[in-house]
Image 1 (cartoon, helix red, strand yellow):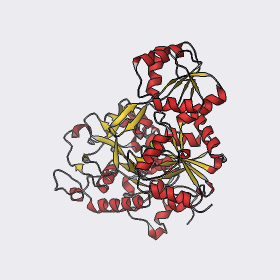
Image 2 (image 1 turned 180 degrees about the horizontal axis):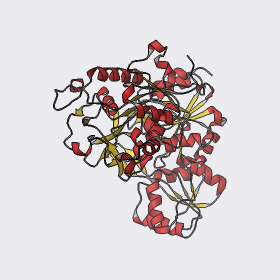
Image 3 (image 1 turned 30 degrees about the vertical axis):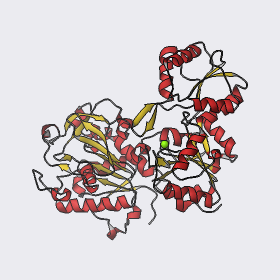
Image 4 (image 1 turned 120 degrees about the vertical axis):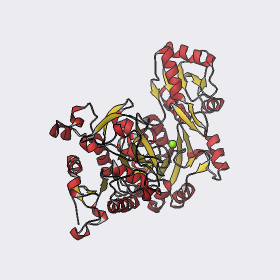
Length: 504
Ligand SMILES: [Mg+2]
């Protein structure tokens, strides 16, 4: 059966879900309501592009290993069907939107538990109409991208709530009494809200002016459906329908979150690298970190059991030298950077001068002190050309974040009122120009692969290369669905790329 449009299965009872049907129609998709795959109508799982788990009554506590402590109006048959349907869509890695009870079904499916009878019921429970209360997004999650970081008004009509969070789920929003209001999955295309966005769309509010939701300053629930629509339209996970990978001769790889996490290989990363070489293709590692030089990475990879030569490493420090030689040839440079970076600049023929420079370059200097800060601010204030190796505000370490180059830019700005004239590293074009010069290929023969949308994926996508998001590090599918940067391909990790690498 062929479809020209996206089809969403709503797993519920027809007479209970008119608002969900409208909300799905509003995003231009076709809703089909059923509690099992409607095989009698000739539908199979492959005919559906997404699943919506709607609101409803309480879930049978036996399903999360508890006796009944206040759960009520249970429909065990529907619970079982919704969990079975969740299983089918999870296995197929197809998008799922869970709303209210649907959010709880998802949590129980992934091994989480529910609060059976919320002690703060009075602000959440249906009293003939929706309740309202404030909720705040968790920083960095898709909820923050949709509704900002300040508290917003949402509706509520539920009796159970999320307790222990299921494996792989991430809390994205909480109400002011601590109740979880939204989650997403770390690597699967799953969004869920405890509240009811289908009764907060602008169209619903206009059609129901007497209802509390329409009268309150509540947010536009339509944005949640827009995010779900993006998930449904996004590149399918672990698939390459346009055969982009067939034409790739060089894989440009981010490091942390993409091939390793700290000192541990990401599962399958070594096999991926081996396959790339075996099939006559190349890989290079591309890093923004200018506190280390290529030898340090070669040494780190050697300790982890992989022998590579320095020509496989591309750093923002090297790219900055390339830029300086092109645009400021022979100029004296004041460099804020570690000894390793200083050595690298000198070895590359850059003239360093701390007293009478013509250009300022700020790198990731972990030996920064007050004297250096005074100097750099003086030179920037005096109006010298001001470059930086990369924009990152923080650098992840084993034990948390440490301030990176972007934090140094902020310090300089506070004193000298200038940000860098030019930043070389990802996501900017200069490091990609340098990469292209190093690999000597055309842009459509190179793919940039990384775990961050706003640096790795943007670096590829905005500079004419192919781009791939891997879900093994920072970004999850919910963030991909609410990001301005849309990767060409999305893979769970580099391991899943292996079957797509054929001989050149
Ligand atoms: Mg990374």
